[in-house]
Length: 189
Image (cartoon, rainbow, N blue to C red):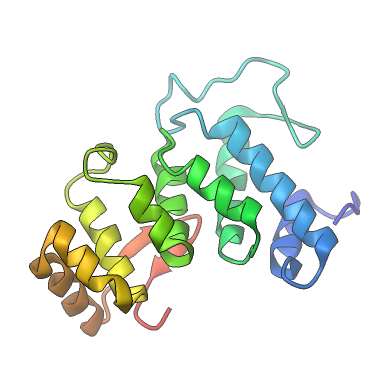
């Protein structure tokens, strides 16, 4: 993972793929995700005003080239789907309500898939105002799909019709949720 002769993005992708079986790869993947979230997590990178960083900002020993660096590396958040550690859970939940929509959506999908109980404890319709329309309800419906044992709890929060609406879309083979960093949720995923 520390072979600097290989491109950075290739090393991070390899670390994410090997993380479950290689402790060094896991450590490297965690460090890169942590570094990314520490730099970009507090900012809304979709806002031109927030996309400016002071000269000399660094991430993992590499000079940050503002938005280019963000766009080029935000996909590493998808590695959180494979990292089976307390730190992966901690990072996901710590930045779950990040100002940046792409980071927030990616981490929401990871939390819904991996740690639904924690997602339910950490969020409510009131703490999730930055999502447009019914996105929070869709996230809860995804919990009901991935974790059927939690469906009654989800239906108490948002009602059965929203959950049924999601399940109908699944039966039609429609994409349910999209995160560039984590991918699309499709039936059978």
